[in-house]
Image (cartoon, rainbow, N blue to C red; front, side, top):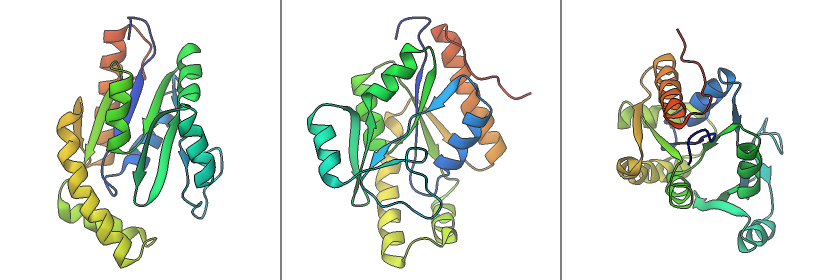
Length: 199
């Protein structure tokens, strides 16, 4: 990205690493940052709002968007398809706003390949035990799903080396502060407005 351009920021990490919570906090504290809403074939969970949490589409609609080249990245995660609409990101960037993508590691590396200036941040759990504890604590998945998520998480952790930054989520406030510090430093380097670092 040329100096002065807004940033594309990717936050990834295994299930249970706290991606959603960290991303939400960062967005709340960063008026200059907008969240990219992913497209998915998975069904809505309780409380999910279409167009706000995700754009929920059929597998056929997802395939049509993918085949038309409308997706900046896409990946299959836990048996469902997820993707990022390129137009949504481009419109935000064109409007001078940095974009936060909370996506899977496959998607993150795809974004980096398509947009080399993207900043990739990988969230790490304090330990495997913490990861399992968090996944079980959700109370939303059965045992087979939890075991599959744990197996996938261990594979995803191997992708941390491909990210620009790695942040351990052992304390939420500290983790959020570190992520915001990274975004601000990258924004300054880029000449763009970044979120304030909490004092």
